[in-house]
Length: 290
Length: 274
Image (cartoon, rainbow over all chains, first blue to last red; front, side, top):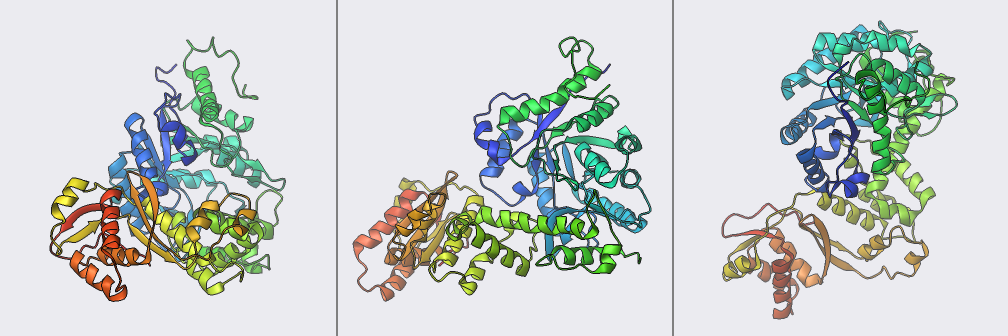
């Protein structure tokens, strides 16, 4: 049994600024902000982030680092990210294990990477550059994909683990993305889950996908699915101290509803780690955990 | 199947994701991918191609909300798609996308009955810029009055100050966005307008000024001294009245857009747009 408490956060989104501006008491312990939304503004978004930072720890989560880009890293991006880090003093800085397009043709998407030795070497080198420049470790998140490659040298989980072990970065483990990929690419999600040592995991993401009929699509527009809660339950039982974040980016609910969805994670944490609370949480909120 | 280098793969993937329509992707590239779910390789690539169009169309629509409203969904989506396929994003920041959209509309002139569309887009880009600029500490009216005795002074304006001119009343059109479309036909948008846009204490303000006032403000914003600005404005508007000049300085004083007054080198704080 852990003596710690669940560390549950939600994404900071502009739609909730009016609710959060009067600084209401919330049930979450931290917020995650999309780095790019605050790197190029001196307006209201940055004011809100600084207001939130006065009351909560903040993680900065990027979508444009493009760590797997064969064209290299954008220096102006790194300079602006470092300036934001110095201003906000986040407790986590993260981005995605992906590339986002060519520098002159940015697709602004989290694009799939072939799990090859060439890509591994390049990404480890890029992570080293980023961590040296930022003077801090970063976290990289596994992404949802809708295609893969017949010529990989690694499984996704071996690739992710190798990057973390060789570069010293840690993993932002997105369990929704794990599940989406398991369904799309037909592997057992528990194998991926077991393939990542918990000491390499620096944060967990939870979100909801959309079933397109032909494939699962990572939309962040739904509540977390029971199957993803099951994965979370399995992981959090082994990693009680990892911060957990609920993402919701489309059809975003009111903040109290978002909080309640996030609190399901706290209930599951409590079920595993705090026997004094299990009497009041008689039934786990997830459906198929056993 | 040829194993591509990472660079080759990324160039081919990018090319496939930026196709204007669902035309065939290079079969060699398709042979190098395994589709997820029950997708075919073609439809798996299509997921990314569609995602790219949707994402950039939405980003453009966030900035150019009024253009979208005026054009209507179908025409806006067509224009956005044509623009994003011919003007790829080169910034890491999605919200930077669209700086050249007003110029694209000016050149393209998509609707003969909406000649103001490019100017409306230009106004929306200015508004977005002002939104993201920092707040400033204003000179108080007393401080302003105290130092305004010398004509050799230069006025340093807040970074958020923008001047905007259009032969159409685009600000009035912009204010209608989101209302019923019929409201546009009731609006007389043929009146030229000169606007002072600025931010004060995180609020954005748009203020109508007259053409002579606009020109005087333009000179002042460009760093010319008060005396020089008046002289240049008088060269164009020989009937410039004391009342007009007084009005400009009242506006400057009471809007809180002055950060300080200088007597030496020209300021580079303001970036007038005309």
